[in-house]
Each structure stands twice: as C-alpha cells, then as structure tokens.
Length: 342
Ligand SMILES: [Ca+2]
Ligand SMILES: [Ca+2]
Image 1 (cartoon, rainbow, N blue to C red):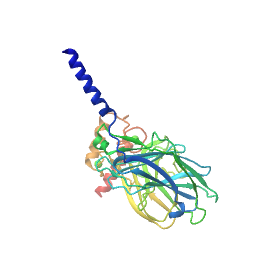
Image 2 (image 1 turned 90 degrees about the vertical axis):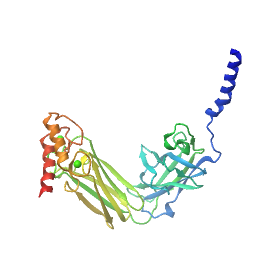
Image 3 (image 1 turned 135 degrees about the vertical axis):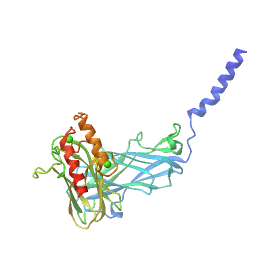
Image 4 (image 1 turned 120 degrees about the vertical axis):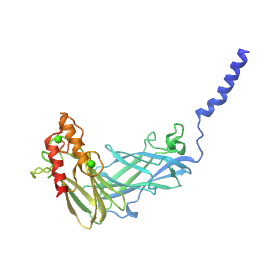
C-alpha cells in the first residue's frame, strides 16, 4: 500500500516538474536588436552622431525592456537619449554611463509595453566636444546577459515570468555630422545667497540640477558637488553647471534637494544663455516636503535644536549642508518666513 502511494507521488512529481521548470516561453518572444546610424536622417549638430536602437521579433505585451550597450571612440562621448514611442505611464531609466558601457531600461508593470516589429527603443546621441571632422563611435550590443525583455507575466510584481535575452550581438560604426551648427550653450548658476555658511567643501550635497529639452526629452543632469562645481571667484557660494551642444527650443530647468522647495521653470532657448537661480527661487526650509515653508517646518527644526540633537545629519534640516543642524540653518528658514510675512 505504502509503495503504491509512493509511486503515485512520483508520478505526480514527474507530471508537475516540467510545468514548473519551463514556464511557457511564447514563440513570439525572440528579441533581436538592430543598431543603425541615423545621424543623417535626424536633425542634429556638427560633431553629433545618432544611433537608433530598435527591436524586432517580439509580438507581445512586455513589462520591461533592458539593454546594455558598449561604445568606444577616441573623441566622442555619450550625450543624451530620446525614447521611442512608449506610453506616459512607462518608467524610463536613462543610461548609466560607466566607462563606455550604457545600461538603460523602460518598464511598465501596470499597463505593459505593447511591442511591435521593428520598434524604436531609443535614439542615442554621441558627441565630440571639439568636432574634428572625422569623429566616429563604435556602438555594440554584446552583453546578452544584461540585455533582455520581461514578458507580461512579471506585471504586478509576480515572481514567475519569462526573462528573455536578446538573441544576437549587434554593432554599428557611427559617423559624426561634419557640417551644420555647433549648438547652443547653457550656463546655470545656483547661488546660495539666503543660506548662511553654505559648505564649500565636500562632494555630495544631495542637490540635483536638471535641464531637459521639452520636445525630445534629452536631458543634462548634475549632482551638486560642493567642491568641484564651486565658482571660486564668487564670495557668495555659487555653483556653475554648463550644457553644450543644445538645439534651440523649450527647456525645463529644475533643482531639487531635501529641505528645499523644488524649483522648476520652463525657458525658451534661441541663443546661448546664462540662467541664475538664487534662494528666492530655490527656497530652503521645507523640512516636511510639502513644497512650502511655514510654521510646521519651523516647529520641526526648533524641536531638533532644542532637543540638542545638533549633530543630526539629515539633509532635510541641514540647509547649508555642513553636517550640523544649528542656528545657521534656523537663520536660513527665518529669512524665508520673515519674507513671507512682509
Ligand atoms: Ca514645508
Ligand atoms: Ca547646517
């Protein structure tokens, strides 16, 4: 009897194991990448090269697409990305540029990504800082482990689904545009004129600056480095960020950081331009992140200072980023509150 039960169990295992081992991989998921030099098909600047990254072989709703590309050039660097036609709800994770490796992804775990044959995932722009007239970049996909799609089964965070790697290596040599405009430059200065004792040494400040082209989504971004970005010719702590090779058009400048009311402004660029942001615009004192500075924030910082926890290092309280919460931070907030009361 016991033996009979055992064989029944074995039979069940034999039936069940293949089901768990091979979640059904649809024949329609066979991702193939193509890299194409589209420099001469797109508007662009002298010294720029544009590489289209496209995918075919997938007729399915996906939850994510990830790609890991390599690039190699004597004179050109990665500059920006323009995404393909994904829905607004998709989360697009811009490339991390790690010594010639670009890893980026798009995902939509709620609505999914409807893949079509020969769909554009993105167009990458590479650019030479000083165009020589003979600038080239080799772009390749050969890391198949980190280049894959996730099928819809991953949606909603489900644990069982298919990660299907790209099936092919691909490469292209991009040739930079040798004629045309060299582009516009933007200089963004961030002036801490309302924060006493803003620390001028140390790197991380937790303050981020972005300049985004509203039409293409091409983005320049910086993390304020208290030492490296400082304009040492200015007494008031001033940090300078430069973007070059920009096309004319509408841009959004934004600055954000813990303890500050986030700043965002749309600007129209027709020429190279300088833009200055002071603490009247990038306002310190918003401890509770509700985008305003008021009594609630004041009570929070007073509570910290009175309780003697002046070595607390959370940036939310430490507007001058010197690692302490003290009267200098309080003064920065008071200045804002007094101004509001006027
Ligand atoms: Ca607040
Ligand atoms: Ca401080």
